[in-house]
Length: 182
Length: 182
DNA sequence: CAGTGGTCTAGACCACGGG
DNA sequence: CCGTGGTCTAGACCACTGG
Image (cartoon, chains in turn yellow, orange, cyan, green):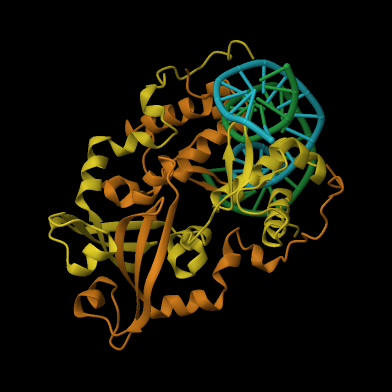
């Protein structure tokens, strides 16, 4: 009944950050050093780091190190905001249905909160979230229309991995040959 | 300038699913078989599968296999709904601020959409989302109060990993000893 | 019991960054 | 240059599921 090693390490590092061992912006020891400290392989240690990165507690910088992130008012801190995450953690299947989607003139309240200029328009969306087909949330979201236009242009779906859209990664060969140099 | 192998495999498998090679609910070949097919190690293949699981395209069932998920009206499909994901992909730091949080009587519209019964109450939350301190969304979310009560009880923050809250994983020892059996 | 995903090892080479 | 994170290998044992 013991938790996987990488989760134990996750908890340990999280505790030490909360205890103030490292401050926001500090670099924590390298993966290789931490692997020695915790007496595990580097791959296992990376799993622990990954869970902390996923939580927004740490952030990695290639070639530079791993740093304590500035979490500010991060999602999961305020309780109910991480609703979808909780659903996933409980093994539910989150989905959503958009039931309305239109451009409109912002209300005074919306204009203040989104710091809009006079004449700016907004896109207003209504959607229902489900967990395994059970409705768990009804949401009305208002976003500055300018932002939406930008995103439409850049073809959102392609920006998922790094900036991979520039590479058109070769994906045609099903059976790949051994990587060359390594 | 070539994409990592696991992303190439991710793209390939995604293509084959979109092409209808496997239908929703189908079990795809095992990780070991796919590793042979793509001529990579199982760990590398698991990285590819993981990205597909993260996208909600596949789902794993311990001891049973990996299956094509029923995505339905999944988040990222409908464009603007995956706003936060897009921000993350672009290197922005997403945050949010809750500006209102109270229990209320549902409107008729809310009652219908959340399939509430007479007398059911809701929790209504207003929040602003930011990307690197720039407000990008104003949201009003309404959830059935019964659900919120449940989540309050079970101490949300502890349900992050599996059902780990029951285990109180030993995290006190910084320097761990070698795992026993392996 | 046979197969599957979950975890873990002890190495390796690469591209990137400036403590 | 030298350390860092990113990727990858070729194995291994475990817990779980039921084709």
